[in-house]
Image 1 (cartoon, rainbow, N blue to C red):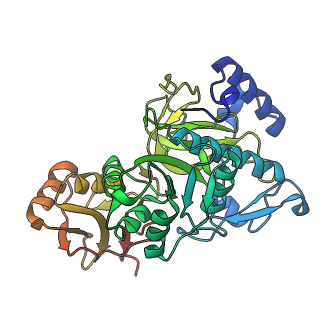
Image 2 (image 1 turned 30 degrees about the vertical axis):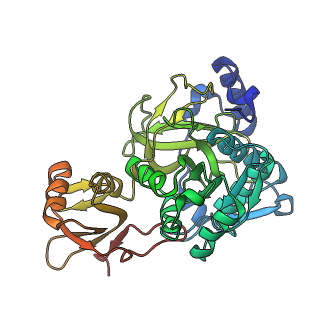
Image 3 (image 1 turned 135 degrees about the horizontal axis):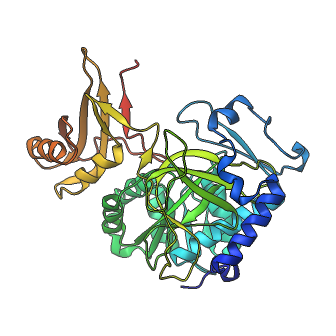
Length: 395
């Protein structure tokens, strides 16, 4: 498949390192060898500086304001200069091209528009690539399904959970023209990928980003390999560190992703701790891109559930559930403390008895849970990021 910016995306490693060195030195006055000695930046600093305390250019030079979703507390405000927006559009165009889009491709964008970075980030990237964009945003899910059929969209862009919600309203997938989807903004497993592909008849590709660093397009899978998301290393220097000690970890080891922005003007960040857990590889990719690749997000440092001494991420539970054919890819985890001990209830749509599901969870994860099999349509559908965990322990 064509590469959007081959002179950058296939840059030989020595040239890429020279570019990173120059940009790191210019932006922060830091040498690459001394990077690991620099202090981390964390989200609480952005919240404490709300709204514009960390800007490095005058506000009048900023042409766009976005904000994080605020799902884990106060939203963080981010700003962009014209150059920042141009770089962002390039990164999102790279992601779409890696998934197989090109000039003239009809892209149905069901990421939310507004302060959330997903909608406008993908929109401008698609236009940069020369695609024809349907700016559907989120909501009115039956109409989304109708537009997909009527307008002949070839690409669907939204969260993985919303892709499944749209699929609920499509009676004849064969009538669609979809061939690929760019899905992100929430952790998802290979099982969920397979469920989306079955429901919509497309190739599902992962895209990663976070508003503090840029938005979607920090990294993305290529359709050829789908074996890790290519980090746009000319714009972002990526590390993996031990979540507890902060010490750098070698490639192939799961740890917390840390990003330094090499080209951001309005809000540059040096060694920003994302809270996202993944690993890196720098092995060659079949697509020809030379950027480092990051694994799927396995969870977040603040997402881990501790149930009666067992540590587990929601994505691990999802992996077990979606391996059972009789279960639908719609579930919710409810954590309560009715007495002195925590209890976990796994609510999932399906047509199987709860006992074998409970046994598989205990066998795979060492986790004792109450399993509730509920009718189709019982689990709330999300138009954005799915609410997978309801924690009632602090109520």
